[in-house]
Amino acid sequence: MDSKTREHLERQQYRIVGDTGAVKLCHWMRQKLIHGRACYKEEFYGIESHRCLQMTPSVNICNHRCLFCWRYHGMTGFEKTRYPDPEELLEGCVKEQRLLVSGFKGDPRCDPELWKQARIPNQVAISLSGEPTLYPKLGEFIGLCNRKGMTTFLVTNGSVPKALVELDSLPTQLYLTVAAPNEELFDRLCVPQFPRAWDNLRETLELMPSLSTRTVIRHTLVKGWNLGWEEEYAKLDEIARPTFVEPKGYVFVGDSRTRMTVNNMPSHSEVREFSERLATRLSLDVLNESEDSRVVLVGNKNSKLKVRD
Ligand code: SF4
Picture 1 (cartoon, protein in one colour):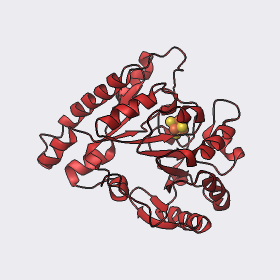
Picture 2 (cartoon, rainbow, N blue to C red):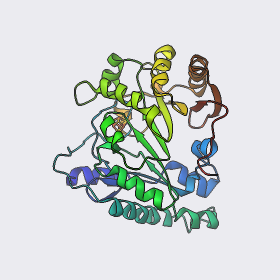
Picture 3 (cartoon, helix red, strand yellow):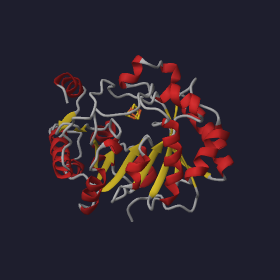
């Protein structure tokens, strides 16, 4: 990673591990430790917000340039990158997370028991920035987390189906972002940096039913861009037959503010209405929702929701 990218990321409170790894405290860590409020993933799936390690193996590496992305887009290329080994990556991220969490200890509002637990993450969200399937040791990394008793949530843009096929360990929950109902919108909104990216996304959708893990299709909804087209989204979802679908509203934060306006944020009720129409087409139910995060959970009411027993 070049020094300009590193400085930019560190100014945004990322802690860099090796050449491509990074960790950053999630907004919900503070909310949980100080105010006792949890992220929607705690409510939906039983993930404890204060024990979640939000990290990426590929902070500066992505093959899309989504207009709604809140991350830094000054990617530095990856042909000559030195990737951290899985052990170095996990140990480095946990160490940096502990340092970041240490600042809460002196805050009288922080629950000391939760603070102690926050030092021992038991969930890894592989999603912070960049495209994680471009990290060549992703399967090994997930296997290492799983062996340490940590659940893993992996979020991919679906650009590298081959990488998913080759994963020797699958995440506890695999998210695929589908942010467009058709190729034309996909190319304009997700701005893939390589040809026939839509075909790769379709290939990933086709692959999903064969993966023996919980799967989620995430529809990131940007008002004025990709909100609507429930019929087309339903057809794509039917290919993947995911365990859950999560329609989620775009949030006007980070670097996306240079490409979007606040008017591109749908209200929660718009996300909810989209979700109801989609659920009807898929013969599924609206199982839960979080107004704070403008997200709705769609699935079969008999599905197991919690990731831990
Ligand atoms: S795929 Fe993810 S990291 Fe890459 S540009 Fe899109 S939102 Fe950003």
